[in-house]
Image 1: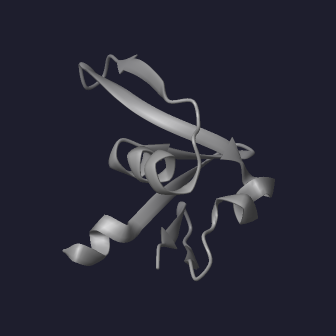
Image 2: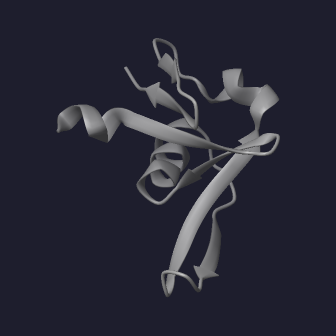
Length: 80
């Protein structure tokens, strides 16, 4: 489980990456202060928070020693 606490999942959303909930918190806390967006999602009857940034700027969001794992639907940043 400790590995999960240092993995940030970024999901593709057009030309942006989005990080939700815990993943958004990890980015804001350890990588870069971003504007956190909170939205109501009717299908789950809850609020969801996320941050986002353009795919072309991914290098700015990697700490030294970060492992990048690209998957079909997401990218995982494994923090050092």
